Length: 373
Image (cartoon, rainbow, N blue to C red; front, side, top):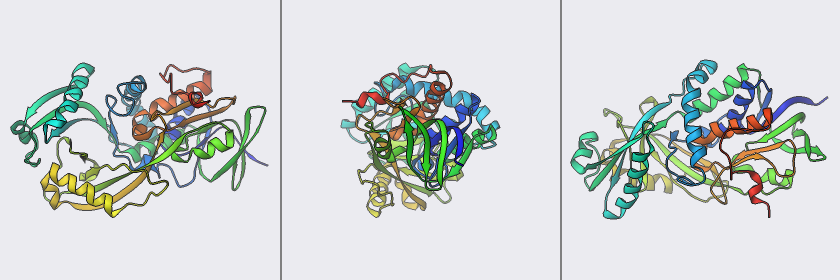
């Protein structure tokens, strides 16, 4: 006798667990299938920065979803912590972006314009090198100018994903280990999801499969152009020194203050297929850039070197919604470097459509059918 579930969600990252959470809030039972464990892939290794004002597709087609997702993060956080018992450290942060030459000034000028006009708690101000040094005395001596911005947020991406999963479970969802090998379908409807251990019958299925979404294209016969983008981070501590009060950015690298007194250096970008092993070359490159940004990093001790695979689409925009030609198969994938930020919007949008047939989350232009033909 096969197992049954109202909705099967394939993938236990932030998008899949957010979908399970919002379905649970709507009273719909979901089963999350994860091969390695909740938050074990990119969602567990992200630096956890939440910036709705910049990035691929921002400003542009991702703008509305990014801001809606940002506001969702803020609105659900108190309740999610209470429902899950997991404090994932959501907090508003300030950033200090350094310019080491005149070529960097136009980009900072655009960032200033974006933050200065955003309102809603965001702001930016120009600093000379002396003012920047007052904020962070350890910055590199080559900085000619700096931009201080405020309003972004950060969180522990692993604990956030865990909180979503735990809260969903507390409301009736099931999280189980397993390797999905295909689906059974008839008449444009998926009837069950096939695991190595056997099938799970379902009323609907959500594929939140990240860089492995190419398998979904084979199962459903629809284009899902998602590929892995490798990213590496260094988790470090500065013995006997305080954490920076701001995230420090410039020269192609970022230094983040993170939980447990750590300082994270990140991040790299590399097309390396499904290789997710940390590399010495990436470590050395990140450290060389970090030393220019903040020479005091020479005294830092490496705690952990991580690598993960981000799911990126051919147009660098996420894929959200019902798969073309299918009545009950949905996609929530391809979020790239904005996965933690837009996971709230992705999860709520898909859950809304399953529960009621529509959503007020702005996902126009991000639907799966844009790749047909």
